[in-house]
Image (cartoon, rainbow, N blue to C red; front, side):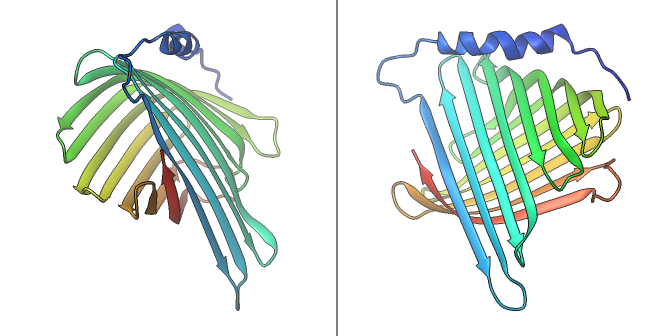
Length: 243
C-alpha cells in the first residue's frame, strides 16, 4: 500500500476557503443561489421485475468573488427483489475568481458505491481554471491541478492512498430559451489507477420550474478490485425542479 503526504496547500484550500466564502458581501438584490433537484423512477414488470430510483441535487452560489457548487446524488435499483445497484455521491467545489476568465478551485468528492468493490473513495484536488469560451449560447471551462485520493477496498483492511493529477472540461450549450445541453469530462490520474468520468445531459423546460432531463453518466477505472468491472454507466430520465 502506498502512502502519500497531502500537500499543505491542498489541505489549506479545503479548510480556510469555506469561512472566506461566507464572509463575501455582494450587491443587495443580486440573486446568489440557483439550483435544481431531480427525481427519476423506473419500474419494469414482466420477465424481469426491476425498480430504479435516482435522486440528484445541485446548488450553486455565484457571487462576485466566489462561485460554490454543491452536488448530492443517489441511485438504488432492485431486480427480482434483489438489490443490484446502490450508490451515493457528494461533492463540494469552491472557485475563487481572479478575473472574468481565470479562477483557482478546491474540490472535495466522496463516493460510496456498494457494487464497485470499494467501501468508499474520497478525493481532494485544487488547481487552476480558465473560461475558454464565454458567450450567451456557449460556455467552455478547463481545469487542471494536483490532488489526493483515498480508496478503501471492500471486505479488506487495505486502504489505497495516492497522489493524483486532475484535468476537466465543462461545456454548456443553450440551444433554445427552453432547452440546453451540458457535457462534463474529467480524468484523474493516480499512481495506482486512472479514473475517467463523463456526463452528458439534455434539459427541456416544461414550464417555469419543471424540466424533463435525460442524462448519461459513464465511469472507467483502470485498476479495480477482483470481481468488479472497470466500466460503469447509467442513463437517467428525470423530472427536475429548478429554483
